[in-house]
Picture 1 (cartoon, rainbow, N blue to C red):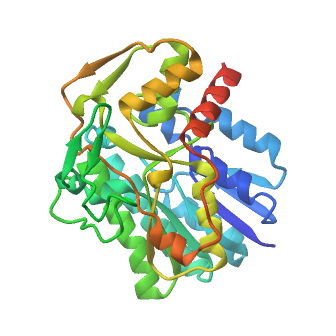
Picture 2 (picture 1 turned 30 degrees about the vertical axis):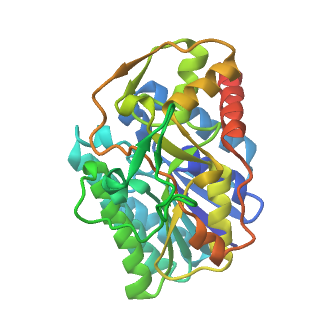
Amino acid sequence: MKAVLITGAAGLIGSEAVAFFADKFDTVIGVDNNLRKYFFGEAGSVEWNQARLKEKYPNYKHVNLDIRDQQALEELYKEYGTDIDLIVHTAAQPSHDWAAKEPFTDFTVNANGTLNLLEYTRQYAPEAVFIFTSTNKVYGDTPNYLPLIELEKRWEIVETHPYFDHGIDENMSIDHSKHSLFGASKVAADVLVQEYGKYFGMKTGVFRGGCLTGPNHSGAKLHGFLSYLMKCAVSGDHYTIFGYKGKQVRDNIHAHDLVNMFWHFYQNPRQGEVYNAGGGRHSNCSMMEAIEICEGVTGKKMNYSYSDDNRIGDHIWYVSDLTKFKNHYPDWHWKYNLEDILNQIHTGITVRV
């Protein structure tokens, strides 16, 4: 039997991974205890997605387990042992605002939980491929010191800069910057995954995501940019733009495109490799541009206001350079652009409502 273990299985990336790998593995083991509801309230609950996965995929086995629980996690690895061929680790506390409220919770979920998974993989499934969903927040606020110019609806990097054509690459320093506590806990996890690859020779890959998005995102106020924005556009609920004149730029990658990156890595893995993973120049927008698209999709004006209080450590302009990954895996390409993503999110929201 060949099995894939997916943590955060009922979340955005986890559930996309379940769907993607269900016909490629004999068993899909999904680990999720709906901590997202604890983080973000009822709006962030993934129970609906968990139920959908159980119903749709007969080879899906759901395990209600906290990755901080070493004993329970070790028992899971003992049960499936060397049958586990791939680990896709997406479980996390994902909000840098929330992390400041409960630093111990944030760090133990993001850093200690990742260490637990790595060590039990080393002990019980050493030949498995281990994929970690990291974040561009590991670079801290270093991107904010790039030479940026203000345009009518967005901030943009100057055309003469090496990052203009493709975005920010993996050579950007993760040191000497303000990360937020969330960013710091993800740095710890990110480096651990690299180290288990380089020190122990395990097949590990780190994917530093931009804005990860798609129709199965349980977007909430503190996390899930496009999903929460479209929720507000549909419902008429108030939305607040925090800082940078609403011109801050994010690149956005559909969950399917990210999981497809995982698939390519799995088929030809490396040891302790790091990739930036986002929409790049293919799919990016400012807050103001995203609001315009949402208004076009819904056919009504959004109810929003502006606050000068930008979020601590927030990026003014971030576009991922995927050149390194595309050089290593030239058959991979994006399937969805920004308009595709927002239309899918809109459809998903209206169906669930």
